[in-house]
Length: 529
Image (cartoon, rainbow, N blue to C red; front, side, top):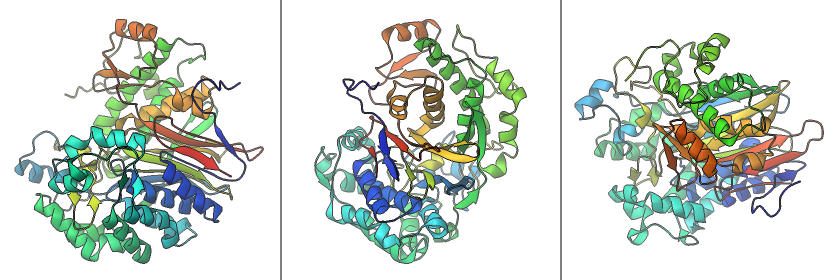
């Protein structure tokens, strides 16, 4: 029985349709479209457009997008809406520009040509039903008339005020009066509203061609970028459908987008976990340790091998094979924190997610991101577009699979997920939080299947994340578990800000009932009818 004294909320239930997002205004916008007869694609685009306005440090039209779409009774389709590097981008060119071993977040070279609008328009053209002006109505209204800043958005805004203020144009726009907006204050983005009106009227070409594209290219060039108007023009149709990848876990198929996304890392963690008996009564320290060790192994492979699909042929089949997974799982020592190595032993030295199930039974798992908080922080005051920082994922190492190159896509952290049973989609799900997402997918599903938790319980459970030589833990992890983990050699870092967020909608294939959850770490909610 649910503990109503826990200060948590139970799963949301609905019998016909549901949307779950990390922002209440986005959820409300999606529900409005659902009740107006819109389908899953219409709903997702309406919700993400709102969130691009009301949660500007997490997502925007200057970012990228991935989606998994499952039409009722049909196979899951994956949409890659990630942007490509400019035609002139090479390792040599960036090193000549003064960069050495990495691309900083705020560098103009961290900006690949945004893919989000290409993805939205591809989804809408192929599967949408309502016109874009109807779908964008709420977002345009909030952009032009203003919106109330919610508590979590205000906290994140304040946490990132110093870095966004370093870009003069972004500082003027996002820090009115020299400070971040307080919770409950009103903020508007009228230029963003104009962009959405143009896209509603003319589709993707309104963003990638003509005056808007010319202005964006000129602004990035003024910062030292290699972007040209032709790069934007070539990117109009860059979003494309690809074949998803999957692995089995707990009697289900977990479906992810293929590389260049890190969905392969999530599947590798799950494959490793499937080799271990994760009993429901396992100690907290043991469970966290196993997840940490599996995460370190998977992320080591992610960072060394995952890249644009043209640069990592056959990687999915290799990494998920029984031989490799057995070898990697055997490396986990329950008594000591390990150092990961590649399977063949060579030595090498912010985001929003939402999901929808519509009245027809179509399911959509959808993620849109500008990567870091406020992305690259590079804001074009002539168009109102804040550019993402996804190119910071590229390597500046000749011969590396993820080395920057003309028209190449970088390794991506944003990953929508879809759970299937007997060939039918039963749960769109996703986890926000940058690099955490692959580990988050595995932890969420393990909570549901190995610990028997409801969706909301699985989301709200205390989180941990092994990354960058540390084991990040939330305050909800017990003192006893912390002590034991430290004894095993984990370098603990107690987080002062929550790790990620998540949403999910579970379809009961027998009754048709929908159960939804939205992470309490964010402002959002799941709603349906």
